[in-house]
Image (cartoon, rainbow, N blue to C red; front, side):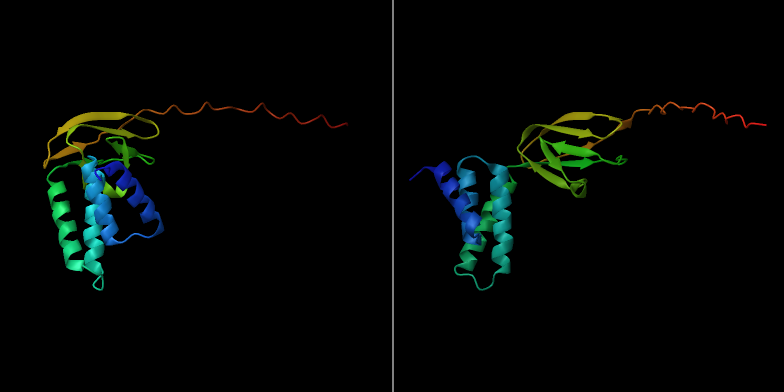
Length: 170
């Protein structure tokens, strides 16, 4: 009935009970209708993988084709940021557009909504990193993160007072 936000809400609730490729397709379509490009791309990509794997599914070819077509269309509407962290101190946290990016995804194209994208990185004992890049639809921007570890001061050395042995009676 044109109420895409409600349809998305109801479909998301249904997915909490049981998710199928056809339900993922509906969720992807409703995300698209309300302007959630990244979520729609994610759902349509998962839909395509699941439909391809389920050879016994009803209407498999139709659903598979619809998921692939939607994913391909959406892929042209997003940009990507590739974050590289060559010397990452332990505890480094990288965020792209506010979303924490797992270290396993450093060096991999991370989808973003086109426009200005903020990349931040923090690590214990290091100066925070901040870079804003402009990403066009269909384009990819590389960001090399350089974290500068600040000099750590050594803790003060505390010397205990000398132990004086009690005098022994003669």
